Every structure is written in C-alpha cells, then in structure tokens.
Length: 144
Image 1 (cartoon, rainbow, N blue to C red):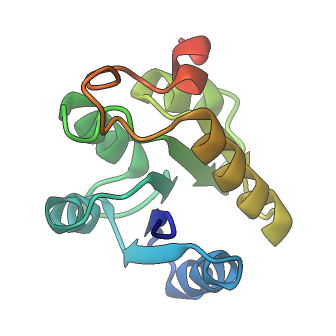
Image 2 (image 1 turned 30 degrees about the vertical axis):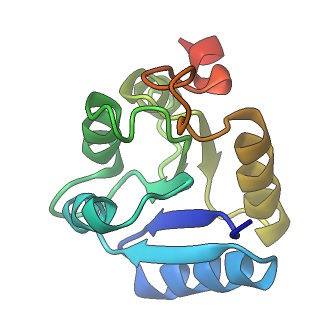
C-alpha cells in the first residue's frame, strides 16, 4: 500500500517547505503548489488523498480552490484542510461553506497539522469505489 499523497497549497515558500518537511517526516508523500491555479494543474496529474490549503493566496485563493475541487466529481470527496493567518470572525463559516472539512489558524504546532491530516484521512477514505463515488467525506457532511 502506498503512503497517502498530500497536496499542500501555500503561497509562502518558507511555510510551504516547513509543512512539507513535517508531513514527509511522518511518511506522507507531498505535492506542493504556490496557489490555487497551480494546485488545480497538479490535480490533473496526481490524485491527492487530502488537500491542505492556505486561504489567502494570489492568483486563486483557497476558497476558490476548494469550490473548484468540490465541483469536480473526481475530487469532490477529497478531504480539505484550510489554514489561515487571518483571524476574521467570518473565515470559519466561509471555509466550511466553500467545502473545507476543517480550519486551523496559523501559527500552529507541527503536531496539529499531522493530527489533522491523520484524523481526516481516517474519517474520509478516498472515493475510489463505486459505493463511495460522488459522496462527500463524512466529516464534511457533518459540517454542512
């Protein structure tokens, strides 16, 4: 069985590299993108098991990326974790409305990222079987 693939979307290169290193150290494969458009291009060639995306990015933000992923039958059930440094009160609702499963405010401990990825992967198995095709992950459905 292969290690899960995390699509990591973050515009700040230092933060992106730090998150990628943490995830690789615990056994995840990581595919990185600097914005939502680059992430959508990456999804065409790779099938991530989970997405971790910043919300505030140039070109296409994490809200737009999440809506695009949810609109595509091939990626609609992939769990999405949003991260942001913006503590605006409306951000959590906006992230959930876009289709994110959870939201974390930066900065956070590396263990929090590992735990978030691990728990969503356990709760939201990939929709690779016909029985799961087209369904949202259970954690996401509970948030809507």
